[in-house]
Length: 335
Ligand SMILES: Cc1cc2nc3c(=O)[nH]c(=O)nc-3n(C[C@H](O)[C@H](O)[C@H](O)COP(=O)(O)O)c2cc1C
Image (cartoon, rainbow, N blue to C red; front, side):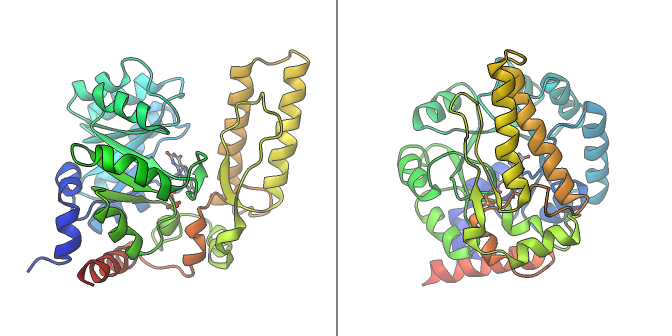
């Protein structure tokens, strides 16, 4: 007997594309999505994705090897498009015959999609507008993730529910479209599937699973938080190319405002150019997230979290979370 027949039927295109039991991705989370969480997600029937972040090719190579030792199921790698060694990282994925590469953080640079497809990898991209989504799908991307502003981490300005209404009717018939941002309950999965999504991507709901290496204090902050505590960062200076980040309010949030002022001043004085300014901002986040996730500095570090954090109340194994989401979705669709 097949479990979750209604949900799996609506997920079929996503299941075929990912090679999984369920079309439920755990979106890459820097420092959190490493071998342990990624393999646990894939072993539970979902699709785990390694967050490469600022890793060197050597580190990515080691992480992939270690993940393969923990699961025989498919998993992907998330690469940030502005990484200075992007093509070396793609070469590492090629050596490991990684089945799916997610390109995040901006428009994929020329040749990157082709380089992945050349070794047989499937390419997943994000697109902030429908026009760009169509262009990326035309130029070789295999699947699209639409991610709304409810999500944790770097976000766009539009809510998931609005993106879903705009993108799904146009694209879902012919393409694999995965919906991300603000999903914490299976009812929501059912709703997006009924709208035509092939699957969903969650981050916040899995960040504090038992298998996640996040520091106990990071997890505690999640369990205590309500939806309204996960706030988007404010942009201090309109010139600064700051992508807003959603995280739990703390001293680190305020420090980011101060950091922006500092970088704006450097721009004024002509000491940095726009590219360097953006890099400084991104390094700030990577460092701050590490402090919270790895060191447990929940005051000064960055507690990136989506608005669904209010539904994360206790530490549970990935398999338990996955089963609950699927149970809830199935019940909703059966109703
Ligand atoms: C702690 C944290 C770190 C994240 N880091 C990344 C990242 O490095 N790259 C990326 O593409 N997305 C990143 N994300 C976004 C997730 O991959 C995912 O798309 C998002 O969490 C989905 O929305 P949700 O949090 O509402 O479930 C991060 C999210 C969180 C909560």
